[in-house]
Structure formats: C-alpha cells, structure tokens
Amino acid sequence: MPRINLRGVDKSYGSNSANAVANLNLEIGDGEFMCLLGPSGCGKTTTLRMIAGLEHLTNGEIQVGARVVDSVGQGVFIPPEKRQMGLVFQSYALWPHMTIERNTDFGLRLRNTPKAEREQRVTDVMKTLGIEKYRDRYPSQLSGGQQQRVALARMLAVNPEVLLLDEPLSNLDAALRLEMRAELKRLHNEFKTTIVFVTHDQWEAMTLATTIAVMSEGHLQQVGSPNDIYDRPANRFVAQFVGSPPINIVELRDGATSKLGKIASEYFATRHAELSGIGSVGIRPESIRIAGPDTPVPQGALGGKAEITGVLPTGGSWIVELSLANEKLFMTTHQSPEIKTGDRIDFFVKPKALHVFDAQGNRLAD
Ligand code: ATP
Image 1 (cartoon, rainbow, N blue to C red):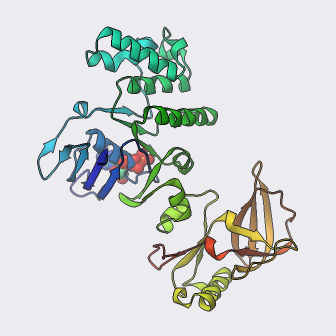
Image 2: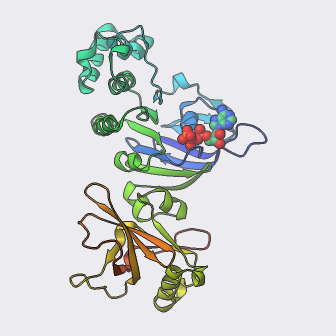
Image 3: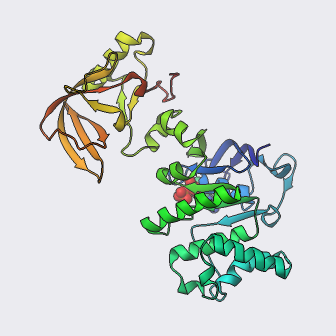
C-alpha cells in the first residue's frame, strides 16, 4: 500500500482563478524520497500543503496509510496536528529563547512523552545530526546550516511517519547545501522515513530523490526515478527542464528553414520513414561527439558538419558551441577538447541517444 495517495486532486484558490493543481494522481511509496520538481508557480508547495492539511482540496482525496485524511466527496478532513507528519519550510523558525536541546525537545513535550524517553530520543537525534555539542546554545549562536540541522532534529525527534520539506536548503550557501544534501540522504537511509521534498532545483532532485514527480502549471508531467526522468523524458517540457546545459531541441516540422532541421528530417525520412514529419528531436549535450581519426562516424548515426564557435571550460569539463549556419548546438565533454574556436568538424549522435517528440511534444516510443 502506498504511504500517501493523491487521487484526482484539484486546488483552486478562488472561483475565477485557474487551478493551482489540476487532477493530480500521485502515489508515494512507503520509505520513498519523493521530490516534487518544477518551475516557480507550478503547484509544488500547494501539493505539499494539501498533504500536510494546511490547505483544503477543491476536489479529490488524499489517503495516508490506511486513513483517508481529506476527501471532498466523503466530507472528511483530518487536521494537520493529527496527521503524524513533520514539516520543515524554507524559514525553519526555531524558538529564539530556547536552547538547542529545548528546541529539539519541543515536539516531544507537546506530545507529553515521558521524560526518560524524551531525553534518550533527543540525545540520539542530536548525535545523529552532529549538533549534540551545541545543546546548551541558543539559535542565534549557530550558523544557518547548524540551525537547519536543529530544525530537522526537531522533526525527526517525534518520529513522524512522513517528513514534508519545502525547499529546506534554499537559505544555505553552496557548500552547506551540498553537505546537508548528503546528510539528508544519510538520514533517509537510516530512518527510512517517507520524505516529500519540494524543489525547483533539478540538480537537487536528481541527487536526492528515489522518485521525482515533475510538475508544470499545476499538471503532473512525469513520475519516475532520476534516471528515467533524464534518460526517457515523457515530453519536451521534462526534457528541457531537466539537464544542464539544457537538451538541444531540433524542430522537424519547420525543418526546411533550418540546417539542423534539414539534416534531422532527412535522417528520419531515409531511416525511419514512419517518424518523418514528426514534431522535434532532442539531443543531450553529452550525446554529441566530434568525429576524428580514432572516432569514425558509426553506422546509422545522425551527423553533419559544423564550425566550433566557442569552447567554455567549466572546471573539469567543457561546453563546446557548434554552429551550423545561424543555429547552435551545445555539446559537453569531460576530456580536454583538442579542437579550438574556428575549426570545422564533423559531429555525430548515435541513434539510441535521440529523443523523438510528436507534434504535441510527447515522447514517441523508442
Ligand atoms: P514556488 O517554487 O515559487 O514556491 P510552487 O511550485 O510551489 O512555486 P505554489 O506556491 O504551489 O507553486 O503556487 C501555485 C499557484 O497557486 C501559483 O500560481 C500561485 O500564484 C497560486 N497560489 C499559491 N498560494 C496562493 C494563495 N494563498 N492564494 C492565491 N493563489 C495562490
């Protein structure tokens, strides 16, 4: 049984406004680390708040374990404090007048947990998160990252069935974010808590999630493992949202006006007639190769001639800009490129690496 099940969920904030979330069907498995990923305003926070019970649904229902916690049809609504969930938001709001220990202890006191059990639990969680040494300090005496850990400790102390996190790392600098990500992943492995994590950062989602749910304009676009989402994007939106530098998209319908489009259209017309005239083809930057004496163009590859118009080092890897007439293709490589700006080269892409989308932008079967 899934830990959380959203069925036909709609949310609209006013009778005239478009749905912030529309017909959302999503199953979140027990022990899963689910990232809700999408651009600003796509409905991620609204979804999290509905799971928490901080927003009422407009339609549909949400079940947590065996219990329906919200159902418009059945007229059921379980309030947030009875849902056994821990919430950590961007601003983690510790009590400034309480020590770190008292902050961590807070939820357990509210639940009237016996003293001995409380002390044991708080000590265990503080040790796990490496904040035991700060137990007598006040929040203002800790760094942002340390405060973030206290916020997490406070949630974990009450042993929630589900942990709901809304961009909890966004106030941290890059190094701390990385550290906290590793920490969250470790905590998840250790506690096996079901986690729902909202982020607009694809990299964060790729590194943390066991499953990613990609949303756009209130609609669910794809649910899958990080590899599924990257290697088999369900549509153009997902393909373009995930990946950096972004996927190259070559329009085929307007192929006649574009050099790349012509190359690709011809490729599909001669090899896969059934696909000619379809919408577009996506090519990940790392799938593009430059042909050379040791790297002949393989049979069946899509390729052409281009000029190198830029070689940008990014620290251990390079982004290479290829130009065909006025169009650009971006490729990435981890090997120091032997080419330089102004060189004319032959490039190619293996057929397996092509993502083909129909006129509506949906992925065509491989
Ligand atoms: P962000 O990453 O910017 O937080 P998000 O994906 O979490 O965005 P939501 O906060 O869920 O998006 O917002 C979804 C839509 O609902 C947006 O169009 C937003 O303007 C609207 N919305 C959110 N909260 C309210 C509210 N309280 N009243 C009216 N509209 C709202």
